[in-house]
Amino acid sequence: MSTLIETKSLTRVLAETVPVTLVQDITLSIGEREFVAITGPSGSGKSSLLYLLGLLDRPTAGILKIASRDTGPMDEEERARVRLSMIGFVFQFHFLLPEFTARENVALPMRKHGVLSRAQIHDRAGDLLGSLGLRDHLDKRPDQLSGGQRQRTAVARALANDPPIIFADEPTGSLDSENSEQVFSILQALVHERGKTVVAVTHDLDMAARMDRRINLIDGRIDGGT
Amino acid sequence: MRLILEIALTHIVGRGRQTIVAILGVAVGVGFSIAMAALMQGGQDNFVEQLVNTMPHVQITDEQRHARRQPAETVFDAVAIFGLRPRDDRRGIINPTAVLSWLRGWVPGRIAPNLKTQAVIRYSGRDVGASVIGVEPDTERGVSPIVDDFTEGSFGALDAGGNNIIVGDVMARRLGANLGNTLTAVSSEGLTRNFKIVGLFHTGTTARDEGEAYVLLKNAQILSARPNAINDIRIKLLDPNAAPPIARRIEAEFGYKAVAWQEANESLLEALVIRNVIMYTVVAAIMLVAGFGIFNIISTITHEKARDIAIMKSLGFAEGDMRRLFLLEGVSIGFAGSALGWLLGFAMVYALSLVRFELAATGQEMTKLPLAWSLLHYIIAAAFALGSAAVAGYLPARRAARLNPVDIVRGAT
Image (cartoon, rainbow over all chains, first blue to last red; front, side, top):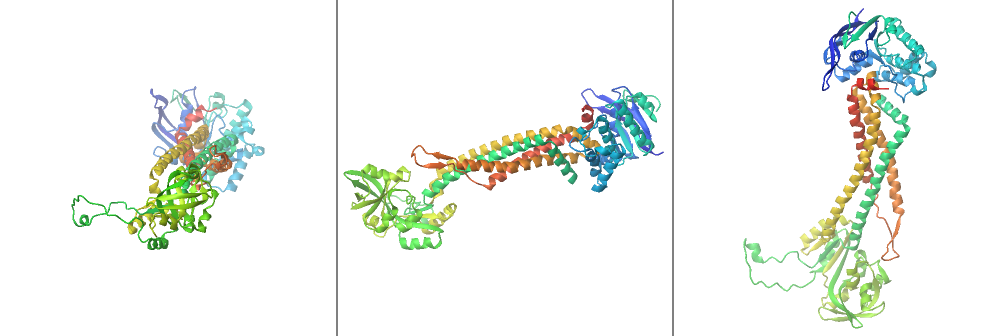
């Protein structure tokens, strides 16, 4: 099992008047096909860690390697390219672009990536949404979809460029239990059937217990054994 | 780039009402600055036009600009001359026939020789001092400001020959004379001659209406005892703006003072420069206000889209993409607004051109607003709108693109 994400002493300090340490001295490695939960009380730095790993934020100190590439020296363009091809994000809120239909939302990262032709992108977006049970809602805009449908569209969008890593920030946090279960099993299937690595922040310990591995944070540090 | 364009268009179309407000904002700014510029430019053009129409473009008189140089002055470096008595020059332009044919050879325009002389005009015991201008009706027609301004009689009556005179209506009123009466003119040479009034003109310029009388050139020459003399050549050019170099050339080659209308009206034109400064300040102020409006609307839209910027960054779009996207949105709105503003400006200028004013002073003259139709106004206004729109799209987008997506994603609902 090769390592996808590797960190060494990863630290993020907010440069306020009184510096706030969000994440401190995180050393971990996550391999392929892992289903990892990041847990911890609120304010423990779970989301901060996730955004650092997802290249949405830059660490103040430490090393982060994605697929063995050091992200430290990368410029913003380079990091954007890594996000585009290697990483998919699912947030607590769907964060779909309101002016675009479900299919267009899923198509956007592919269009940006520019590998597939327009027709292929069109088909693939349809297939992705179809595989998540949204075959009938391809051309609806986000405000015409239910919460669960939106979140599944967001998952489909995260999968658009077939990235090896999916980061999820409280992916079920704003859903009812039925939809939560549905989204959770989709994420689970991504790992077990499609071979993705899924790293999900959650405060739901039951859910975390059903995942393969749990990283518990307390005050920005990893708590105990991983 | 095409993707960015499509996203921009989807954004713009997706926010119908906001987009319409933004476009209208731009359009109003563009439209009003166009209308204002047309009005101000038109006013100025109209003023200059009137100036140009009533004046000869170049006027050559039998004067010299400088006192005659004494031969000693050209030979020695320093000369002091005392007790010099000016030579009694023969007044008038020397060899007028040769001069006129020389001028007609190269000056692009209409040329009329005159003899202008001072005389006292007398009627029923009343005297009025006047400039008696001897003209050749054929050539005068091409340069004269009075030909179309007759209240009674006509300029053509001079053609018939004989001792006829045309005077201004104010002068006639002061003399108590009417069309058909016979006036007596007494020249500074002491010669007296009777003229019959065959026309009354009213130009609106009081000095002219009460102080000028037109007779045939021959009659003026007789009256002033200067046979074949002329002392004034008036030129109307095809292109009034070409007057200064032509006047300079005439003066250089021919020696007599040749005054272009620009020189004759220097103080007026100076006032015009100040007016221009005021006009451009006003138009610039309108554009600035419009620019701020454009900036405000577009930057608000961009700020509202901060969340989308964060989302797209998380999807793998780069900062540069985001900047381009919002720049493009700003410019698109600027374009649409400019196009609409052109229509609006055109419509406003057209509407203004239909407005008619009645001048209180005369009661019968209808005047319309002077308007300039200039493509330049449209181009400048649109360029300004596009510029503000681009800046308005770019600045907030740059800030938003730099924002850490985490801050936005976290605080979002």
